[in-house]
Length: 493
Image 1 (cartoon, rainbow, N blue to C red):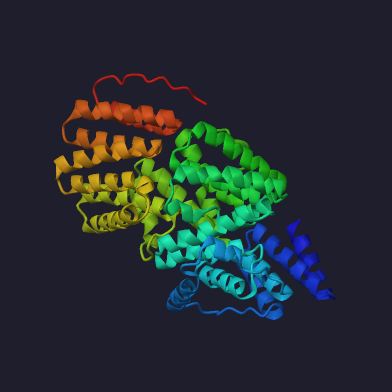
Image 2: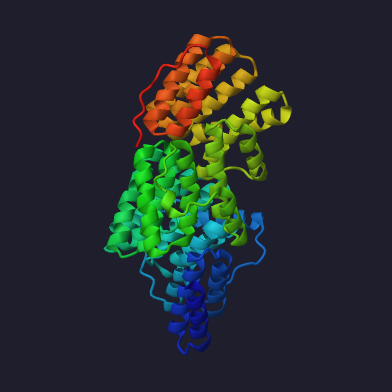
């Protein structure tokens, strides 16, 4: 009973007679609050301990200009430092600073989920303590999260990626490699690597992180790794039959260890999996609808959960061509620039939806959003990862060419998008590109050619394991063609 444990912990804190007991009970309380989804309270607990016991205070009102200035000054301190130079720093011995690093790591975890504007201030403080007092096990967290902050706040991809690689170097060099992997894996999951390296390659590292977490006895971090393996698999076109098995194993782990926050995140991912595959293999795990999950996210101020729900809704509705729902859901995000990899996935679905709606309605607001999305993806393709983003940009450009009635350029872009998705092993986006190309051909009176493309798309969806999506496409094909749809054999899971 979480409430019972919380009550007892607060009694322990009020009666604690030693410094060490106070810190240990406070850390446990913060973890318990976070595990029950109370991230705001967990953040307050850590901030209180840091201020009242460890001499580390934080501003209550965080201004964007202050954050950027702090990141700039931190970047000047570490710019040019190599792996070896970091490794040669002395070990941190100051007990107060070691404990501060411990609570700052917890604070990184919770602000990353619930208060991202605070993350750069926390992570750069860890880096500054490391440079002044030496290395600790928590240094790898400070490096990685400062790297992520440099990317998401300053758009300094290369320097942020470099700090991530230094963090990885320190982990691999350590005799406590598995423990450090678990410590970092609980929070970070190598997100900065997604900006540079192929999505599929980064996803496979979660298997190694999971194994390290189990070897270190850190079940919570192992569950986190399992979740991110499932989440990234969904958006990268992993075989949905296998993904269903992965999700089922994840729910079994969470039921055993009562890991509530990840349980809700996994439900959002499972919503999309079930909608696309039509599988009922997760029916025994109490999957909640997105409306229920949204209520939970709102009541606990869990921004990360709300974000995951919206991404799942964007993803699913775009594949089923519910474009107005995608566009309307994206309204809340348009004042902020998409910077995280999963935000770019959400933006991709919104861009497709906006451009299709612009063509269907001729309303200029849809065109504006679609063109803005294209400019964002141009930046990411030109400056970061062609592998991860090229096919998406090409499909967006194909839809813009179609909107502009430049049909020849549209055909070129559709074809290029299909080839790029195939080359870079995104079968889900390959199927989507072929489907939209087929619709383009049908709408331009090239029925036979369009129908042939839709048949190819149908087979791709089946190969992916998206059986319910394939059924929806099959129904659409029967409507547009007087010819009886050729049966494509389905091997259900």
